[in-house]
Image 1 (cartoon, rainbow, N blue to C red):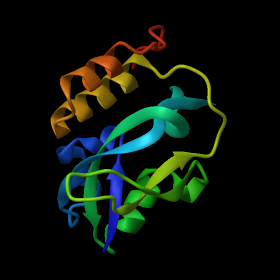
Image 2 (image 1 turned 180 degrees about the vertical axis):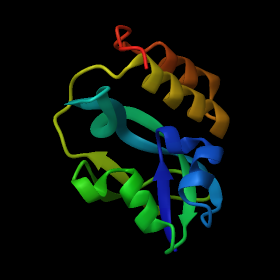
Image 3 (image 1 turned 90 degrees about the horizontal axis):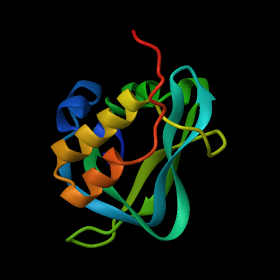
Image 4 (image 1 turned 180 degrees about the horizontal axis):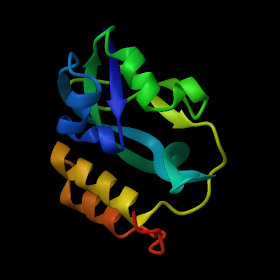
Length: 150
C-alpha cells in the first residue's frame, strides 16, 4: 500500500470510498509551501491543482491506498488521458512528515473553476474536517458564476 494525499473532491471520505473502497483514511495533514490553484481550459472551467508557493499550505486527507484501488483512482483522476500526473512530496501530520503521492494537473495555471466545482471542493474539505477558516477561504475564491445549466 502507498500513502495517498487527497486535496480536492477526494477529501470527502464518502467520495473516496466510491473511488477507492479498499483504501482506509489515515488522518489529515498539511502540504507546506504549496497552494491550491486552478488551471487549464477544460469542458467545465479550470481544474484544481497544486503549485509550489513559499508560505502557503494546503489541507490534505491521507489514505492508505490499496494496490487494487490505485488503477481505479488513476483513471478517475485522468492519468489514463494524461490530464494529471503523480508526484511524491512530504507532508506535515501530527505523527511526522511522511512521504506521500498526489496528483497535479498537466496544464498551465490560470482560469476560473466553475462555481459548482469549487463548491464541491469546499464541501469535501468540510466533510474531511478542514478548519473552518480554510473552508471559508475556498468558498470565497473567485469562480465562473456563468457556468451553463445542466
